[in-house]
Image 1 (spheres, rainbow, N blue to C red):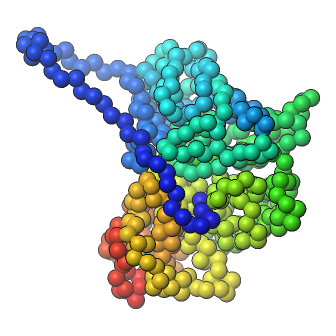
Image 2: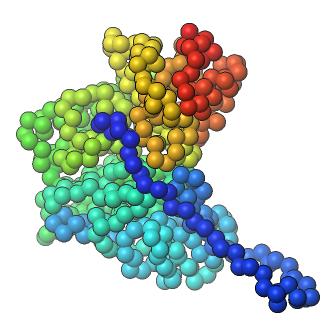
Image 3: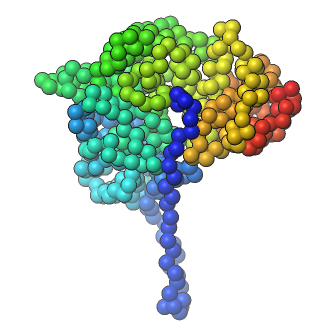
Length: 479
C-alpha cells in the first residue's frame, strides 16, 4: 500500500476475545466423587488465527485451499448478493468453525447438507451436521446478501463506491465486505471471481479473464488467478473502464482506466498503466523472475487516497505520470504478495522493501543513489520519526511513514554493512526461499546472518526494535 500523503491511518482498536470462568460453588467443593477423565473429541474452532494486532482476524481449525466467488452487484443501489464456495481442510477435529464475514447470510451448506449457523459481528460461526475430522477436506457454500457500505469492522468502513463505480481495495481488511473468508495473510488460497453487473459495464479482477457471458440485461465476468493469494489482495472493480491488454517478453498483461475520469486524465493514466510490463522487466533485473503468470494495473476514478498492491493487478487513484508509485506497487508483487507477512507486525517487510525498490529505481536511472537517500533521510528526519519501532509498530501505526522510510533505510544500511554482492544474494534468496508462503522479521534476520557470515543482532536491534535514531557507526551500516 502507498498512502499518497504518507499519513498515519487510524485503524481503530483491535477486537479482543475474552472467556469467563465460573467460580467453584460450595456444592462443587464438597463433592467427593472423582472427576471424570477428559474425553478427547471435536472442538469449536477458534474465532481468530492468533494475530495480536487483530485477534479476531482469520479463524482456527481450518486451512482454505480455494474460493469460488459468484456475486451480483447493483451499482445504483449498492446491493451485493451472491454465494461463495470454499474448499477447506480441517486442521483439527471440529464441531464448529468460523469465517470472517459482514453481510447477512441466507444459508450455509457443508458437503451438500444444510448447516446451522449464527453471526456475531464479523464472525460467521458454522455448525455442520457431522463433526469434521482433522485432515478431512470439505466444501462449504455460503449464500448471502446485503449492502457492504453499511458495514464496519475494526473501526473501518472500507466499501469504496459511487453510483457508477466500485472498487474493493483496502488493507489489512477488505474481504469480509464482499465474500466470507479466512481473513488473514497466513492462509493463502486460489481465487476464482465472477461478478454480474448491468449489461454494458465492465468488471476487472485478479488473474486472467476466463469468460464473459452476456444476458438480456446483465453481463457476468469471470476472472481466475493461477497462484494462491492472501484474502485482502483479492479484488473486483466494476463500472465503465477502458481495457488494454497484450504480451511483453512472454508475460501477459491487462490494464484498465476508469472512463469516469476527465479525458486528459484518462490518457495520462493509460500511458502510465501501459508502462507496467516494462517496469516489471526492470524489477526482474534485481529481484529475479516475476512471480505470477499475468500482470497489470487499474486506475480508478474513486477517491481512495492510496494505491494498493492487489495481486497481479495493483489499483491506483489518478496520479498523472507518477512512475515511482507504480514501481512501489509492482515491487509488492514480490514483497507482500509472493512473500506475505506471517503476522501484521512484520509489515515493514512489505512496505520497507517496496520503498527501497523505489530508491533503487531512481539509482538505476542515474538519479539520486540509495546511499545518498539514506544519508539525507538520516540527517533530516524529526525525532518523532524515530519513535516508531518498525519491527512491531502496533496496530494503529502499521502504515506510519516510518514503516516505509525507516524500513527502506534499514535495507540500504544492511547493503552498506554487508556489501553489494552479499546484499543482493540475501534479497534473491529471501524471495526464492520464502516465495509463495509467509515469513516474519526473524526469518529475514536469520537469512541475512547466515549469508553474510556476520553477527547482525545489534544491527537489527538498532534499526527495527529501538525507538531512537541508530548511532552513526559502521556496525549500523552508517559509517
